[in-house]
Image 1 (spheres, rainbow, N blue to C red):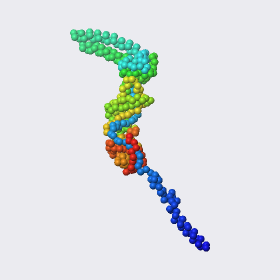
Image 2 (spheres, rainbow, N blue to C red):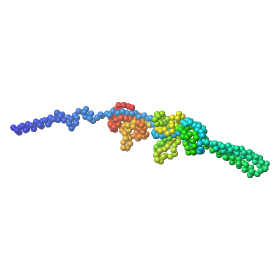
Image 3 (tube, rainbow, N blue to C red):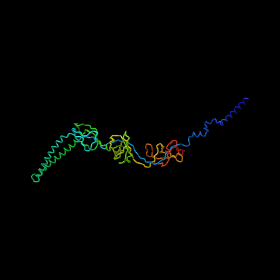
Image 4 (cartoon, one colour):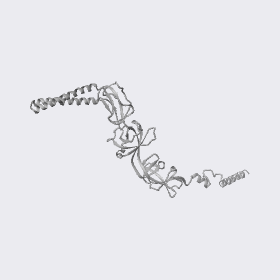
Length: 358
């Protein structure tokens, strides 16, 4: 009896094992989902939605952006050529002056007195020379006596010229049109030839001085235009390159350049910090792409373009980069459709759907 019961249990167990697969109890097990839709969902979408851009040639300026400073067109520190006491100051601080205008006078009384004396001597020696010449014509005196009289006259004239030059040094005049800064001395002050009196500036036009990396030295020449802004100011100014340093600085490997900028309103002040944009060259038919659309690779760069509903991988050679775009020198052509989004999901030949054309 016991053997019959064991045989019945074994038969029943076999029947259960044979029925389990048909009951679909393991549908979520290791064999994976039996629902085709669920399987497709797990594999991901077969078509990737992307945005694209139709490429059109555009103008591209090769611009180098550097910093610089405003320099005066002309400037100097006013000093006297002779020591003495200041008797008169004719200029006002911060005011414009004209070339040749008298600014400061140093005490010149002694020089004027000596000059007056020599002028009297000149008149006397002129009369003596005249009489001696007449006597020489009549052979009443020797040639030597006349030469002595003429020498005294010429010596007196030379002494007068020296005194007039010394007198001129006691008067400080403006060497060019400009604006006087703050003065450092007062009337009555004793000064030497090294004493600074004030600064004189000519700021119209203003000079813009800046330096660019030496690798651009062959692309810059006189006459090129620049654009610049002054710190804490949104006004855009323009200038023109007029001079280049004839050598590259050995320490910084930069080339110093100066440009002139119109400054009739006096808005540009010497010493101001400026941001300069220098156009080195222009390409009229450049192909520009968004920077994020370019994928860097070990041997270069690549982009994806849309062709017949598929993403196609294209190797490219890049050029100039600006704030948002990158120039493509080779690999792309006008009217190509560049894929700009979903770049990380793309692979060559993948089906795509363009959802937005920029």
